[in-house]
Amino acid sequence: MSRNGQDLPAPCARALDKIDFIIRVEPHSVGVDEIEPLLEDLLLFLKRHDECRAAMEVRFRQILDSLPPGGVEIVQYCMFEFRWPGVREYAKELFAGTRDVLRRQSYRRIIEAFSDDWPERVIYSRYTPELDEY
Image 1 (cartoon, rainbow, N blue to C red):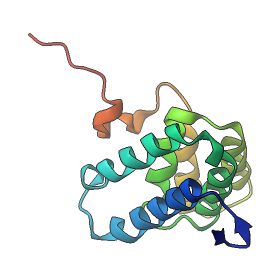
Image 2 (image 1 turned 90 degrees about the vertical axis):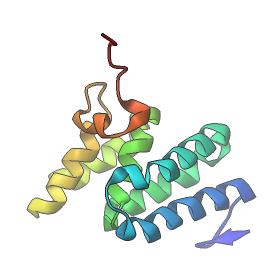
Image 3 (image 1 turned 135 degrees about the vertical axis):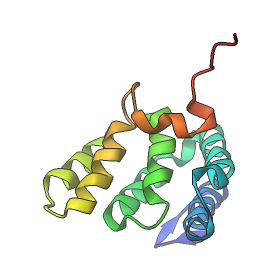
Image 4 (image 1 turned 180 degrees about the vertical axis):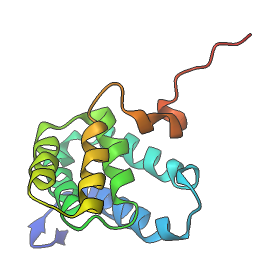
């Protein structure tokens, strides 16, 4: 299968389709809880298909370049788990290279997701610490 001039294994093309689907449906969602099942599906799929890492790093960089609706959440959700250095460094480069306040805020949010104390993790059920029962 060929995508953007690259010959990709079927699982990698499927992962790209999953990302594209999230980007298409995100504008129709109300809150991240509606897209979290899709993010979770993508994350688990990528965990099973490490052979797609290079293609996914390219796609995450493309998301960082364009920042489509849902793009920040896709990168945050996956990078909190994977912490790929190439994606983090690229986000840092873009952050340092722009003066656009909204883009800087998005890049800052993404960079924060590479940390154990990522503040936004609490909005996702996967990353919410278990609450002590009383």
